[in-house]
Image (cartoon, rainbow, N blue to C red; front, top):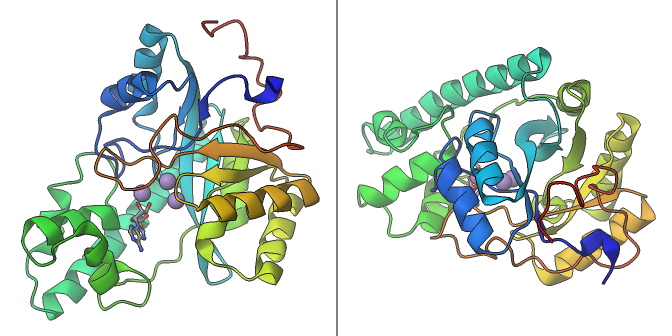
Length: 289
Ligand code: AMP
Ligand code: MN
Ligand code: MN
Ligand code: MN
C-alpha cells in the first residue's frame, strides 16, 4: 500500500456548529464507525466545534486535525478555502472569522427580506431556529423552506430560491483570498482550495485562481471531494500534479440525509501526489495500528 494513503483520511466535514446535522461528538462517532482514522472538522467560518470533536476523537482513538472552511470572494466568485492544522486560539484568525459571521447575519437579513417580498414571512426566525451554532447559513433557510412546506426538497429550496441568481439570493462580499490565507498561515496552518471543481471555473480561471493562491503561499488542493464527481476528482488530481499542489481529501459530509459520498468512503489518493498531511507526523504515535 502507498504509505501516503495507508490511513483513512477525511479532512472536510461539518457539524451543528455550522450547517451540519450532527453535533461534533456525534459526527466524530459517525466518522469512527465509518472507518475514518484521521479527520478534520471544517465548519463554515467557525471553530467552536473543534474542542468537543477533539475530545471525542481522543476518546475513540482517532486522529484529529483542527479545521475550518472560510468563505472567500475571489474576483466575482464565492470560493471556499479550507484551513487545516492551525492553532484555533490564534487571535487574528478568530477576529477574521468573527467578521465573516457578522456578514452572514447581514446577508441573512437580506435573504429574509427577499423571501418576504415573495410572500414568505418570518424566514429569519425560521432559519435561526435551525442554526443552533454560531453561524447562519443558506442551509438553515433551506431547512426552513422545506419544513414550512414552501418546497418539497432541500435541493429545490436552492434551485428555486437560494442558489446564485435565484430570487432570494443575496450577494455578499466575503473576505479576500489574501486575508483567508493570512489568517490560516498566521495561525500555523495550511490552506487548501476546497472542492475546486464545484466552482465551474474555466480552465483559464482555475489556473488564475491557483496562481493567486500559490503566490500567497497556498499549498493544498482538495483533489478528492465527496461533492465532486469521479471524473472531476481525476481532473483535479491532474491540476495538483501540474501545479505542484499538495493533495487533500474530504467527504464534505453534512449529515446522514446528504446524498453524496459519506465519510470514510473516499478511497486511496491517486498516484503521484504529495498528501497535505505528509509532514504532520501523526502517522504512528497517536494512531492505532
Ligand atoms: P452559505 O455558506 O451560507 O452560503 O451556504 C452554503 C452551503 O449551502 C454550502 O456549504 C452547501 O452546504 C449548501 N449549498 C450551497 N449551494 C447549494 C446548492 N446549489 N445546492 C445545494 N446545497 C447548496
Ligand atoms: Mn455547507
Ligand atoms: Mn464548501
Ligand atoms: Mn464544506
